[in-house]
Image 1 (cartoon, rainbow, N blue to C red):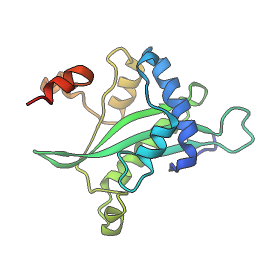
Image 2: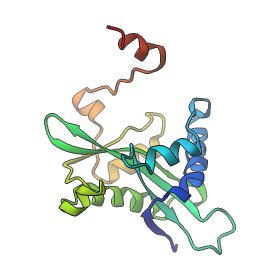
Image 3: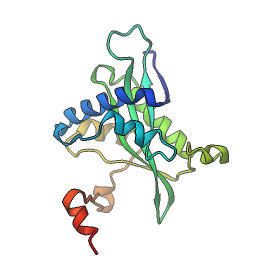
Length: 177
């Protein structure tokens, strides 16, 4: 199958928002999506972006959308291992799964994370990372298997770590002195 991977731009936000909702529907969590196309435009393409994104697209002759997948990621830091990249989402439209698109998207994120070029660092494009982190629903067995086949490990089962989150009222309460 003919497809390409490239860095997202602000014009891709409409399609990223669409695919983000498709991902949430696939995970049966669409009621939790509050992000808008405008949020993506502001948060990903401002002077100091909160995230970066790569897009998978097919040639125009396809009858469905030309943008068929994305990987949204941001840089983080591990006090034990240094620079890291966190892949928030990896999504490929159902009719394009099993054709290497997901692997290519994940590979691109890993390539960008490993790059140590100073000029790229100054542009926020790469970070010389030592690890790629992400979460996956325990019920999404096909994705878990996909990641395991690529050499990823399940730190929850291997090390016992749990990913924790604090948001909404709990976060506001926590912020009180």
